[in-house]
Length: 425
Image (cartoon, rainbow, N blue to C red; front, side, top):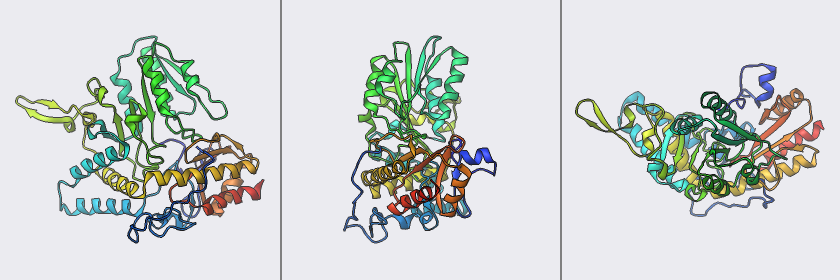
């Protein structure tokens, strides 16, 4: 679970860092408004059926949260669509009644295959981990570090990265170089100025959880590789928000959990390892799930694919949710999702700027996250949003408002958020 981004028991400081909710629960390129229409060949009830100006992708009925909230909080937790809920129910029923003992293995194979197909990789390059943080730990523990080596990151990264490399500094004498952002942006030139022949790894949040800034990965990969280093991308805010081919991105490693924009669940995090690194990549722990063949004398031949990083039995429920979620995304079309959400996020950014908000999300940044400093009393704003049924995230002790526009959101949702702010400024 990403820290500081979910509802917690009442505490003023923690409340202002987390989510403004209603009811019982608590980039942005200058693109034209999304006009994607339903494919006439789609069947009623399928993604894309019954599109309208309030439901451009024709999928709001698959997200019951839209009946209660203007849910603009996908960057915190993406709500389950009905098909994913149904897959979890089916998993639970099967476990309860023990109808198919092989169902878990089928779900693992299905999730791996669907992820590979959707993101342009081979199945043997995909491991299914429990969390995003696990991937970066595996990478760091597999590398051989020497005092004086360095890692280059930027301040827009998620907190796990800083914890991990501060510990590496302490343990191995490795230098952590942190690049400050300017107007919510970090450039390749900024990385180049801090990268040298002792740099072993560049690590970025592909899309920042703080302001939605999205990196163009190939130039960063070229920079890293020119110095004999690797590029890792935390993709938890990227998976499912725009179409991509990971081979063409040139990234060495990427990982992201399923509970945000993939609309799956906690506990299943696809981890991409470029095939050329599988020979040296080692697991940070070992167990029965890595066994490819049992040999005499309690000896074993272990897997050589990315599956060798899966040391224990997976969380089969979240894996089943992942398989269903990836199938759902494939039906909707990630290209359609990107066109719709980026256009709507652009409208939100322009509307907030027009109200005098200080923007943290840069312009012409193709992601679905919009972040700005509202300059209002956080508790008053939080209550007003809750009263109007608008769900967003507060960060930085309540000073920063972050909205994440999902595939099911409409212009009406954005207008509800802007309307609350308009009344308070």
